[in-house]
Image (cartoon, rainbow, N blue to C red; front, side, top):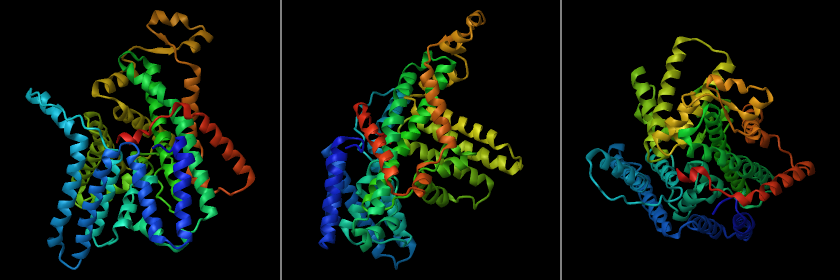
Length: 482
């Protein structure tokens, strides 16, 4: 079930919300939590019910492991470590089986010349997110930072439907106290108005902006081998904008829906395309994943505590793991290597003490991100390299045909310059929304200053209706695939 769908907006969401608060109104607190957990499981299984047993088994297993870690809190860590390792190994093994089995088989067939049959498994929705969420819970239980003995509470923590499919990645200690707070069990008009405000902005990002960049990016990547200079840049920038408005739009909608239930999810985006360095970018992009990679991979590897070489190794390893987490393919590994290498170069540059102008720092960072997204989007390395070759002018230089016609530049053909049929609208859209990303306030900043008043309600209603009119080209969220 998609947030940007009529069944969700006009049936599932209002029913789940009303019944939840009605049950709390009559002090049926356990029943309300059970209802919300059941709604979340229905939301998950709506796509394919055969994966419901998978998530339930995963939840039951991790609850038992977490409970065991909690009950053995008085014992030395050396005795509890194997419980944690068992939990992590099982979780990672489940992820590897569903997400990477065919990738390994394909590469074995290529290297060894074998003909092993592919499993052709359908990737369960949200498996990366609910797996990382539960690994974080087990580590926190091992560290004696959390404990949970109520199974329904744990089910609700993992499956709470606003975040279930594509994050944000949550921590038990930041979620369950909110569900336990008696004040949060009563409908709150201020939270509801803020939640609707954030949700509508996210919906507009997704269906009005991201979904209009999607066909430009898709058509470009499908014709990667024949793209000229301008067309290649249009393709890469279209995807850079599509991905941001798609994923940040989903996160906004998730945060907005959760606020309707008086639950505050962590912020996941903070104007990442305003970043002045690759380190700054990862403080702003998919912030809950950055937090997970830092707290549960980078720091346990040693962080920056074991000398410069080990720091650089830990940075590279963390981002390679982050790349592999995103998908089964060499393109994701290359993407992770590039980001790990970018982090190392940033650290080395910092040691030189040379400060570049902010505009240059932004330009280099943005172009690095744009190039790395090519690998993130491409179906294979060949397609990615074709797009990059086009961006470098290796497929020939071209100019937009409308530009050449207006300026009477037909004579440039004799110098090998071609003219691409790139519409002015595409170029204007890309220029406009790059400026929006860089110069305008983000959703977090707008929501901080949001005051419930009639003018805001009218504008919001207009944006909502316009977004609904774009439902005729509904597409799934990109991060459902990761």
